[in-house]
Image 1 (cartoon, each protein chain N blue to C red):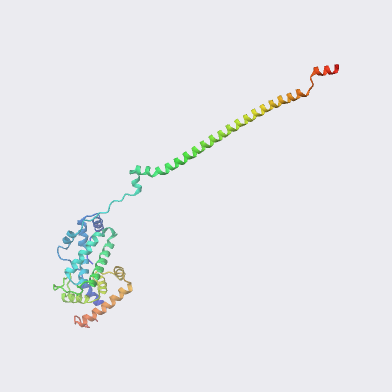
Image 2 (cartoon, rainbow over the protein chains, first blue to last red):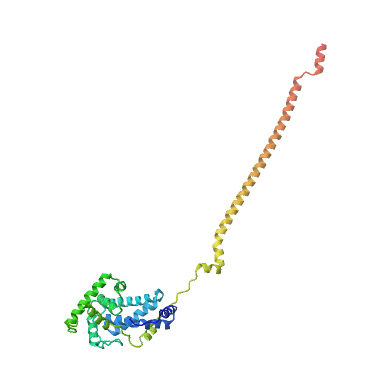
Length: 187
Length: 131
């Protein structure tokens, strides 16, 4: 999770944005844009699609600011809308092919991981069904607990647990099959 | 085993930043925001709108005044009718008494006349005794 300003500051930002202060709204966007953009990118697999989705999510937020009650609610609301919008677009559009752009996988600045492994895992994640992919993104990118994921995606807790278990098994099998890892790497 | 995959996933799925200019592009696309109209509660609005209060009280006030006027007029009519009836009764009583008095006088006259007719005159009696 990324560091965020003190709650008092972000609370003030929320109140100011509600009152029509665009600079305050821009600050709220900057606080959450990496979360929303990353959900779009992991789900849709394309940067242009992720940017388009993030723009739509924040435009919705701008119209619904009065319904946002707290800062926790704001974060939850953004994750929920982004994930569900991405699922809808995967189901109704042609960009369900994961990682279809030819640009290199963007890497988080602080990451010191193998970029090949990162790209391979993202690609394997893109082979999961939309709902399972959303569960995995919320769980391992956003660090949400099972109950929050169930609430955000409107699915039972046991279904979320089942998605996580099956997806982990499938990913492990694909990694072994693609020889990205050996059995010794994953005891 | 799953723990290892989970750690790899967390590392692979770190958040990434959107391209430069994302926020500026978003702000340029923002529509005009309609700030909701300030709603003043009725409790606050009442003192500022006395005409409305008088208008609201006018109808029940007029109804109450009409009822009072109807009761008052009805009472006056009743009293006047009672007085008229009382006056008419007294008049009738007076007329009856007058009629009784007149009748009584006439009966007296008639009785006197009958009495006078039945009694023999004093001079006739004296002449008959002389014959």
